[in-house]
Length: 366
Image (cartoon, rainbow, N blue to C red):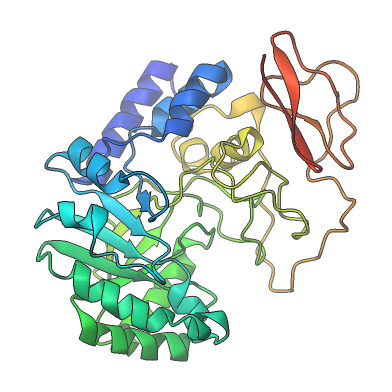
């Protein structure tokens, strides 16, 4: 599918996003996108196409009151709030007391059910009891839609048992699947059916932010085959699925990803904007592959067919991505150094090669 102009493409994107998002709050644009659009002119069309999609706000007890800021910005639309880091804190105080009876979507404690289902630290740290306390507190808002995160790798039988126990503690509407991961919507649909059947009809929400191609392996960290997925929507045609959501912000790094599989891209610290990661997600994703928008830089990685074998562990000295020719200068925000990197070590005028870690240096403005 081709478009006559960028303007017509963006107009269609606007219609798609508006129709998909319904009353989900899109007033909180990621700061990383605002900065990236200013710093990387070649990314602006892509960022403009997705920046108005609703994204989740992550709440912890370590920073400023994101909840109050989000509520103020969202007005009458419905925010999505990820409650993260619950053990050993009372989430009934602070930000959540500001919510009142406002309609809100909560994604409760990513990985807690998964870690509890497999034993170990999830059991030792009392995650299940913490989840029950949190669920009871959040349920005091009659307009809260509460979904407990269930990792795709969780023990299904144990997770179902945990979910049935949590239902007794408050108004649990359902589960969130694929938070910050890459599993295909078809796989998530199957998982949703299993968990819903085992819990008396709990509904599901899917994180589709990076799952356009599904997962070629078990790699969760900056997958080089990820692709931006379908926009957030409540109109997905599946009565068991309440929403597709963007819980992870596409283009923000999963972490440095050293010592991961060959499918991982070495990147900056978790949460930092990752130029190569964003480019890959865009070129491999929904807006290019399905809507026909222009790729960044002329192309993306072609995703391989799914595999069922265990991922190959990359030796610690291997490069994260194929290196560009060593001659010339690295472009703005491109890689310019790191173990195993053989590309240009200097940056174009106005940019300096900045050390992130032993695996990755990046061209940043002077």
